[in-house]
Amino acid sequence: MEIPSTLGISEKTSTSPPDDVPQEEGEITLASNGNVIDDGLQRGLKNRHLQMIAFGGVVGASIWYGSGTAIAYSGPVGALICFLVVGIDVFFVMQSLGEMSTLFPIQGAFIELAGRFVDPALAFSLGVNYWYLWVTNIANDYNNISLIMGLWTNNAVPSYAWILIFWAGFQCTSLLGIVFYGEMEFYLACWKLICVVGGFLVAILVNTGAIGGEYIGFRYWREPGVIANGINGFGRTFVLAAVYYSGTEMLALTAAESRNPKKDLPKAIRQTFWRIVVIFLGLVFFAGVLVPYNDKRLLTATSKSAQSPWSIALVEAGWAGGGNLVNVVMITAQLSSVNSAIYVASRSLVALAVNGRAPKFFARTTTNGVPVNAIVFSNILGLVALLNIAATPGKIFTYLISISGAATFVAWAFIGVTHLRLRRAWLIQGHSLDELPYRALLFPYGAWFVVVLNLFLVFISGYEVFVGGFAVVDFVFSYVVIAIFTVLYFGWKFVKRTSIVPLLEVDLVAGRRDYLARIDEDDVSEGKERPPWYIVLKRIVFS
Image (tube, rainbow, N blue to C red; front, side, top):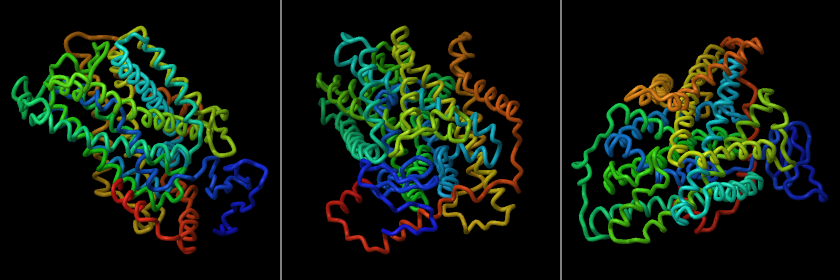
């Protein structure tokens, strides 16, 4: 393929450097494997990578526990309502992100666009908020690993040992580069999808008596019931649902490493969203018909160890080793979710550093586009999971969920704000909606829905601390995110003397990356051979 010289990309490759070492010429270079390196990051992700990275990062091992936690908090129907409402919320969040990120596929995605369209201080506070959201997700994943392995070893091996072992392994895999990461996530996510479908099938067989010989049906919806813990339960489950859906928006961050974001991102957004919603609602529904919400073996804040609803149901059906099968599914699922969490946390930190909102040390990348410093630092902070030595893993799970959930609501709310500002600036500066490569559905109603709902949810997420006796520690973990976000915003605004960007001065040119579509057109014009039948079949099955 011949790269147009007007793009400022060097075509020269050297035989002396190893593969993937770019030949630098300005900010945009070309790696020897043919991928563009843009602002230090390699654009090596294809459409199938984008879809499965988001899917693999969102559907982690903890959902097999968390579906049980959801029904324990608010009952089977209450949990379904919460996951459905948050699913609608995420749909409109993704519509907003789709419009912004296909137009501006830049590092930091909505984080940097918030600074461009709203206020540079918002980019700082939102970026730090989103970075530590994913650091807490890393820690939560390590905590989940200790729970899973504890069931196998009957807690004979201390939880910190499992955390440190897996921490070292994930540190190595996260440094292997974006192309390796994309391929690994694709196949692990495919395996995870197969496991989820298998989980649905097992639930149906157990519920109907095909496994165990006893028909369950909707017995547990009648006794103990369909709703638990009233508004308190709903508040906690909304937070839990937000944590599990969080990561869908990581597609916007992958735009900075996508080969053709204007083409691939809209398709990935549509397919990934529906896949995730169906899976989450399915898992919560089946958890609610497999076990009663008051089963003491479900994971709650008081749990030292816990079982997933599938493990409990298989054991009750007479298969004593069923828990081991579920553990295998969960531990393999964890392989991709931890890597995804490290990926998002490190790229968020890189975006902050590139724009002077974090130490430049974190912006440094290797010659093949791997931000080593940001990866190592983010993963090290994930060792906060070691706190489960002093507290129960269930309590650490609850605290981390509170922080992650509140941070997710804040991020989603300001994605909506940023999108509203983009549209206003776009029209005021004389652009047409026909110029947008992707147009959000039901704008502006969807964007306003995102803003209002998420601000409401972030304030009611800690409602439980005001019921049945005030708990200082629980209050802090429920609302510390709001306090930190506010301090960061006004602190940066005061120090840097920033102001809200006037709509007529909003930059609608930088970062468009239109040349990527032209490169893709060149690939097509060169006439690629038709892929083999088994590749076509794989695309149909997994897309």
